[in-house]
Image (cartoon, rainbow, N blue to C red; front, top):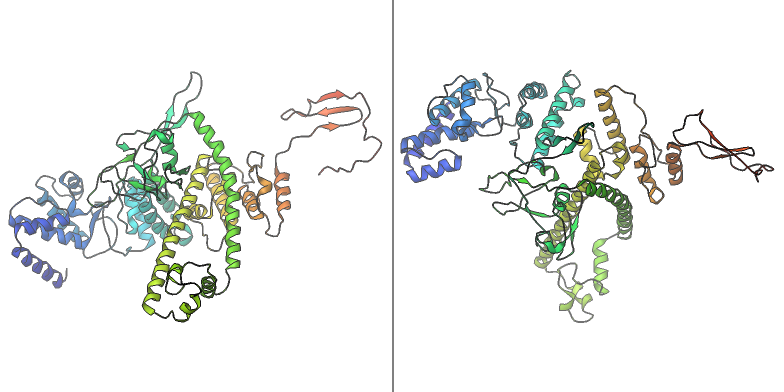
Length: 592
C-alpha cells in the first residue's frame, strides 16, 4: 500500500489513544464489533475494523469480515489455511492480513487465491462480463446463490426482501444477457445460472408429495411449515385501521393468503376503501414499524429492514380447501374478464380528458376562477370564500405577490407528486393482481392476455426480452416465442400454434376492443395485422377453434357424428319425411 495509507492508519491510531474507553466502545458498536477487553485491545480492534471496512471486505453472503462472529469466521479461516484455534481477534486479524496480501489494493469482485468466498464492494468488475461469467459458473457449482446475486456489487442476504433481490438481479442480468455476450460460448449457461439463483432465493421450494388412495399415483400439493411465521398486521392506507382482525368483518382465515399473495383486493370495513397487498400498510410483528412488502415474500422469511430490528419472520399460511380454490379460480377468471373491460373504459376516459384539456392550463384555470367554478386562485391559492362577490377580476389584476405565488406553486407540485405516487402504487397493485391471477390459473400462454402492461414488462425483463417501443401484443408474442423455445430445448417437440378452444378464449370476446382481441390472438401464437377490424379478429379466432362435425340433414337420412367417434362408426337415423329444403338451393355454403 502507498505511504499515504500508512499515514492515515497512524493518525487514526493517535486519535484512538486520546479517546476514552466509553468512546472506544461506542465506535466499536458502530462498526458492529465486540466491545470487550482493555483499552489496548479496543484500539487495535478499531484499527483493524476500520481497515477492513475501508477495503470493503465481505463474504459471499454479504457479511462484512470485521463483523463476523467466531463460529462463522472459522470455516473461512480454515479454507484460507489459517488455524481456527484461537480467540476471535487472533483469527480475524490473521484473516484480514491474508486477504490484503492476496488481494492487494484491488476493488474487483471475486474469490481470494485460496478459494475463500470473499468479494470486495468496489464498483469495478475486474475483467468485465467474462470475469463475472466464470465466477457465476463456479458459484453455481457450489450452490452459492447469494454469492451469484452479489457479483453485481449488491449486498443482499438470503433474508432480503424480493424488492431488493430483484434490483440486484436485474442489474446483473443487463451485463450477463446472451445478446450482449455473443462471443462467449457459455453465455446461455451463465444467464440460466443467474436466473436459477434468483428463483432459488426468491421462490423457495413448496412442492410436497401427498399420498392418495391405494392404487393411484401420488399428487403434488403446495405445502410448507408455519414455523417462525406470524400473521402480520395489515392496515388500510386511508383510515389506518386494521384489516380482518375481528370476526365482525366475516373474513375467513384463508383470506389472509389471498391478500398477501395479491390474488384479491378487499374493502376496508371502516371507510370501504378497496386496497390490496401493495397499497396496504404492513407492520413488523416485532418492532411494529411499517415495511415494504411484495407477494413473492409470502413463502420466504425476511427481516423488516427497520433500524435496530434484525429479527427474521415469515408469513402464516392458513389451510384452504380444494373446493374453495376451485371456486376462487372460477371467480378470478370472471373478474379478469371484467377487469379487461374496465381497464379499456378507463383508458378511453383518460384519452377523452386529455383531448378536452388540450391548451393553456393556466388560462383555463383563471377562466374557471373568474366564473366561480374554481375554489382557489390559480396564482396565489387564496380561497374564493375569502373574497367578496365579483372581486375575482380585481384580485387577478392585482395578484402579483411573488412569495405567495411561489408558495402556491410548491403546494401544487407537492400535491401532484402525492397524486402521482398514489397512481404508481395503484398501477403496481394492478400489475401484481394480474400476475397472481395468471399464476393461479396455470401461467399458460393462452391466458397471457390477462397480464397488464407493467406485468408484461417485468416478465420480459426476467426473460431478457427488450420492450423498448413495443406494445402489449408485441411483448406477448415475444414471451410466447421465448417460452416455447425453452420448452423445445428441454423437451423434444415440434413448434406450432397453441390449440384454440372455447375454454381458452374469454367468454366476453364480443365486448373486447380490437387491441384486446389482438392480445388474445397473440397469446395463442396467432399474428394479427393492425389494420384488422374487430369482427375480422373474432372470425379468425373462431375459425381457429377446434371444431366438431355438425349434424348433417339429408333427404334420406340424418347422419350424426358424436365427438370422439371414429369415422367408421356413424349413427344413421331414418327420416320419415322429405326435407323441406329438397326443392330449392341452400344459401349456406360450408367453409372449405
